Length: 175
Ligand SMILES: N[C@@H](CCC(=O)N[C@@H](CS)C(=O)NCC(=O)O)C(=O)O
Image (tube, rainbow, N blue to C red; front, side):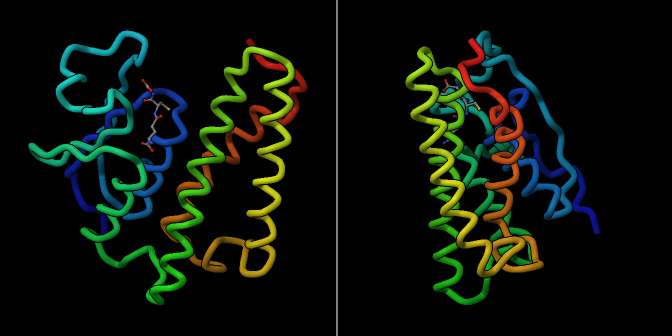
């Protein structure tokens, strides 16, 4: 069953953090409206809804929720069934790997905007090591973090694969 029109996702094109929220909304079968803004020249109203000046922001009625990991947690608590493991240790592990996904995503961002060949290459090898760590976890329990079942942590990794494809065939910064 789809839950109708309860949310507006304030977005920026190809933002991996926005993609996380969009995936979480879709996995929860929530119908939502997407509003794209240009981060280089945001509309006046954006400062009032985004305390950190970042996307994603989820607008639910008059309320604002920001930070992609928090948006995912909010959606998971509000709309059942939960996409977290029941076991509290497993759930804590999923949250830890979500943190790690944020670090990888930030490194990918920095790689995309790297100013020098050296910083580009350094980040590339750091990300490779990080992805290798993730692979080792998934090799034991994959293909997803909870085996066959999609969990909220998987929403944090899906955009990483999109960015990986974007970056992996490059051996120098795109700019
Ligand atoms: N920790 C934030 C990161 C979000 C983020 O960095 N979004 C970028 C776009 S992909 C942004 O809004 N950047 C604008 C800025 O930093 O001023 C989250 O998980 O939601």
